Image 1 (cartoon, rainbow, N blue to C red):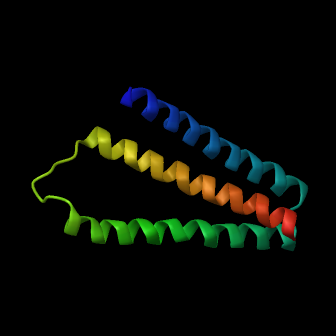
Image 2: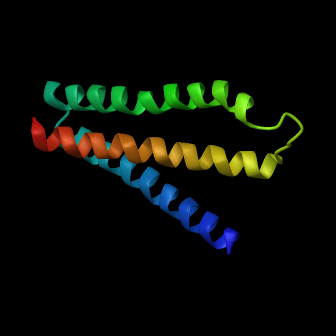
Length: 102
């Protein structure tokens, strides 16, 4: 059951990441102007917030988690892939939002 959920989120993360890079490639070829660069900068700023949230969570986490608990490399890799997918989802959403707004 847990593996099914993890597989689902990994597939969604992969889809979001591919969609983001395909959208950026297509719109770079179509637009490539100052407006598009501004949209990309704003969306990157929004996505970088997730990096700061991750740093804050990693700094606060040892306070609440038992110091004797361990994590496997496989589980750490899965969490990293989830983070990349979530960050790309945030950036993709920001690009779509700012594209419609500007």
